[in-house]
Image (cartoon, rainbow, N blue to C red):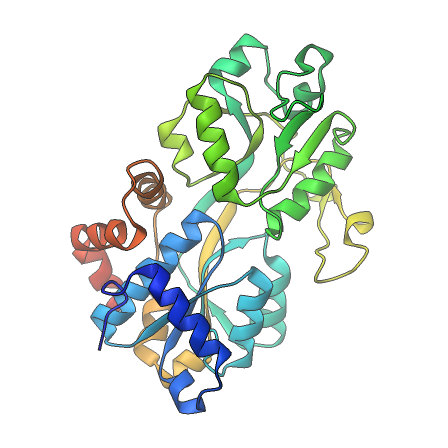
Length: 327
């Protein structure tokens, strides 16, 4: 059996794409544990960490598949081995999928453990001090005109997250309900593309405004200020997702800051019947936000490939791994 670490990630992806494109037997699909890979860095790290443990400690073949949240949850719901694990479920952002597949359908389970996530919008601390910026609404001040215009079109920009993220839909509503839509041009290009540009701007001492979250390497590598927002108020925070209603934008209201997030692993209940040791491991996994942040720093700043960074972390944490795998 070839481990996930022994095969370059790009080759894994190519092989998996080919396998999914060609009909295969049900037996072949069900013998493999399939890990979904959402696009953000923390999720890709968690996917690889889970995959390495399943291969090396539980002796089960693993496949990886880049998918958005909706596709991962729908695949887990089918229970046919096409998708088994979502490695990084942010709540309440992905509330709709959890309520549907964990609550109503009962086809998916969540890990008991979780790590804490926080999200908001950041600017470089030096930029905030120079321009007296404390709140998100300060970004609409006339004195900032042109200071956040990266593409030279005369409009200040703010990156609100990648298209397809649950948080990005929330931020589109928030920009409207905070009265910022006319003052700021929001962008939602893929996170790797944005981060490359952001790191270059920060290296030059330029300003930028963007969605930021923890755990993330940015909180270690850069001096950032998370902008103040009104305290989270459930009465002012009503999110309808595109999966729930085509009129999600009109029916949503987001006029306060985000709640603190809890981040879990989700898995198809087919694993409890067919791979019970894998299911037991996933139910116990309990990552720390600081560890995810440091892993993302190793990958993004130090240039360590994700499998190698994860391997180093696993080797340094045998007691924690053993607790997750305890019978």
